[in-house]
Length: 290
Image 1: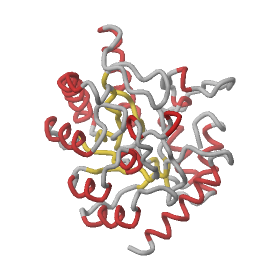
Image 2: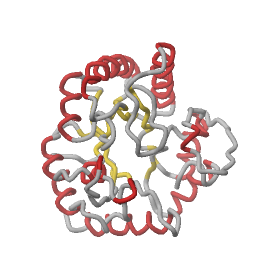
Image 3: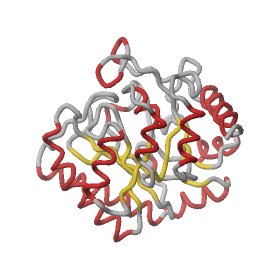
């Protein structure tokens, strides 16, 4: 369920009633007091801004018996894209904007610590066609990791096809160059699969570095950043795409991963819930075979 569909407490209650064990507040959930690019609001939607303190969030989670798996993601480098799916803009509009970004991420890390959530996910930002910005991403990530180390929080970089860190190669490169136990990986199989990469092999290459995963599906579209006709990614219900889930889960087990798999599904003409439940049922059938 998207952050704008129901009041926060009602969404969490619904997640619990559907039989899930945990959830990730996606996109810095607006009700938690964090900024969201206005271009990402659904057209014509109204949304009441309230703030949920870490203590209140903990209480909501405890009352429903759910665990918060992580927070985020937040962009590190440059300006967020104008629309979801566009490449990031590697330049900051000003030094002030860069300082504000660092402070925003530090605020999220502090919130996560106070809410007893140990993982904060990140997007690299930037554009994979502009690798000359890698050194800037590296410098900013090191600053953020330094703060995370002092806060006792693990940062998890996620791969996104249209951003500077887009695949398993760039994920591993960043983690190795930063060289901190507090920088790990939030592995997203659908994002990697959209690029035509082999998901199980990627998992094996990232042995020891994955601390959180998403569970989504995709079909490579053959276009830029793996998109299909019309410039959109093809993201079906989990099990209806081309991510080889049985091999993928076996690879996770092979490398010793025993953490969360968070379903990430963008919805269809039926809305979000039916496809999410179909994804859950499919994953449960896969896990029963491992």
